[in-house]
Length: 252
Length: 252
DNA sequence: GATCATAGTCGTCTGCCTGACGATAAACAC
DNA sequence: GTGTTTATCGTCAGGCAGACGACTATGATC
Image (tube, rainbow over all chains, first blue to last red; front, side):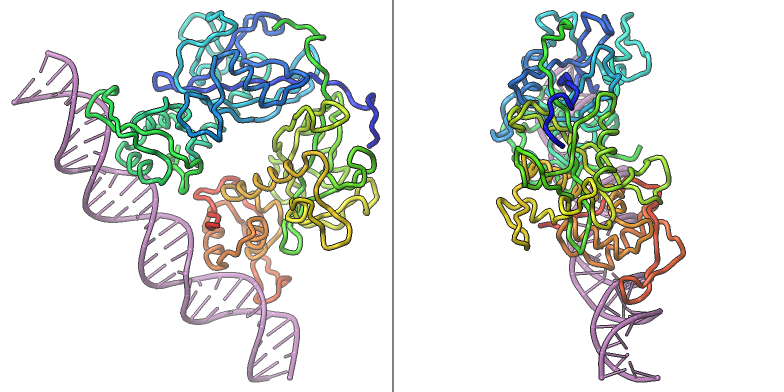
């Protein structure tokens, strides 16, 4: 295939972000309100154009910082900062996905601990955490009068893909700790699994499983009663990234 | 972010293909020789520009057909045609990955049964199946005088990612059957796993596992002795796509 | 045709892991 | 103190995987 600049059509390339967190026992995603057409006033995933000199991962990290203030967790550093996990999710390039022009969007998935209120260019009313369940229901309405679904563009599909990735990935990796603060209890980690999977897990078997998997959790020595009840040990995420054998998601 | 056509840089978007098959007990990938600079004469993954009116998956399927004649397996149809499996792999967009211009490549992964010789625009000498082991070794040389590695651009990374995806995906899905002809024996399927993982598996335990997983294999009633030895039952791929519990890849 | 080599198929046994669930421990609220 | 909540330890039975023995049915070789 000879090199001919006129032989290929120009594309715009964007990154869109599926930013997930667990709030009040529910899996939530970050949504921003669109200020301009198309889909003006509708909610969408945060994102933006990739710059000319920027790698895709850099662009995603920049957008994440702009929208949430989160820094991306450095995979080479020990897992103790408050950074988020960020990974590429998939790329969406239907010719008609954006009515203005040909846009290819490289979606990324970010997992973050529960955070203070989001910000979108400083305007909090234009950014919010919403339960993915609300965001994904067809034409659904949030508890408020204002509808949060359906999302603009093909963002419902992107969000669904991101949620499915998160649900499956916490099975065989230690990624669920990305939803937790730097120090957390076994019970808090269990509530993450329960929120992401939407199931109830047996606390005793869960405790046995996670404490028995080498490298998953490292006790810090401290305890906390912030969940009430008997004081619980505090842990940090250990060095292991892959869980073998995996956590098993209960049948349906 | 207001809509301003001058606010974003134009990109070229390509699809690159990691086409894997199992030949002579080795996992092989399709490579094509580059006819023009950059990297003229070097081997690379097949691929090409996405057209203006084309979806990414369409572009990948078109390139696959152009390079191999393979049709993409329709996921909704019963798994009995000779079509290949095709899925999106990841997107590579480093600003310097192509010295000519800013190119974002959406890599796809294709799995195919062992095929007759490949073709590249009809010229067989410019396309070949090569063991991934040879393609991935740093500056390695094939058995012939002609070096097949390293691949052009960042294609070694793309290939490595594709191989890793295939290796992990056959653990928990029935995708290994995509490497087999429409009818195959348990032993042939086992040799696929052995080639992809590069390990030896116990024939008896493997047989018990695959025949005991509901929906994985459907007996056709026929038998064959094409592998020598006692006649073996022939099977087709069943409807199940996810294996639960998964096939376990032996420890190192 | 007997023997051998090659694959395929069925069973057995043992150890590990999981799910179900009882019991105890340590905090707080009243 | 009593009750409630959460954490943690223990027990037991069932299922599955790894190791491996045994038998079967072909083609190849003598």
